[in-house]
Length: 169
Image (cartoon, rainbow, N blue to C red; front, side, top):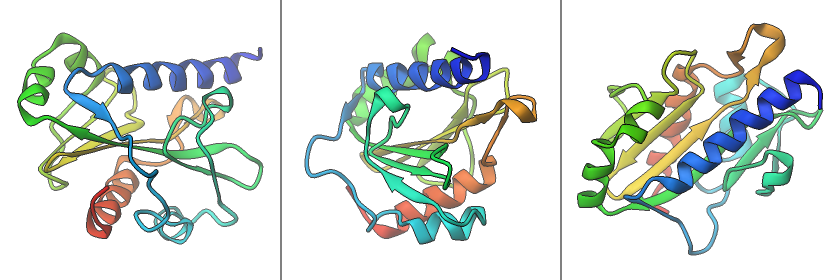
């Protein structure tokens, strides 16, 4: 594997493992979310990137979200994972070393609470809790641009606000 591809794969893999390992978070198991919560037009409006497509979840292709958006060349720019939380368990999870090692935060002005991460690098993840709903939004890393996230935290916050406005999952 080429180094940049390996780095992107490793980051996506670690994110997927972390998301599914948080003890206070339970993976959404009902009907999968759809473009009523976040559409291609919404993402284009926030990012300015034309020609985006939504593709299904497929971890073997680094499409780790319930919703995944790719550029015309097939490169992922955005994934969104929808989950529900038990608030008591979530409070315990936030105090854990694994949570603290994965997130900075809190991030203000979005949802009931929000966290970005990972620490010690430019954040490419934003996780937001609204009531018992938890969304984790991630963007890919652009290796050619010095390991910078493709989308900014401000763009991820705008995407989270759209999802929150559009309803519950």
